[in-house]
Image (cartoon, rainbow, N blue to C red; front, top):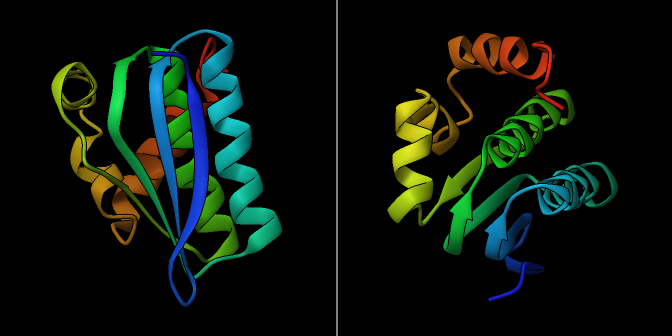
Length: 123
């Protein structure tokens, strides 16, 4: 399965980014761009990132999800990563960001996301 995304309106003010395939290497950069552009250009009240069809998630993919989290806080958008299963779930849990990405209203988690995104090699 090749990497792809699509953005759908779920309700008034809510957008959902559906992600498919492997999120590794340059595809992680593409995901980061899709998420941040959806937040900055469409300015939804809530952005959901659906990972149900993600086959593999790399550390660069985790960084892309964290960058979306930080952008959502900057723009006042609620942000949740949903439908996480398999290897992506195991990785997010192993690095300690699974709960944080499931609920962007946790301000303490924002500090962790900012630190993670600013560490060398996070981009």
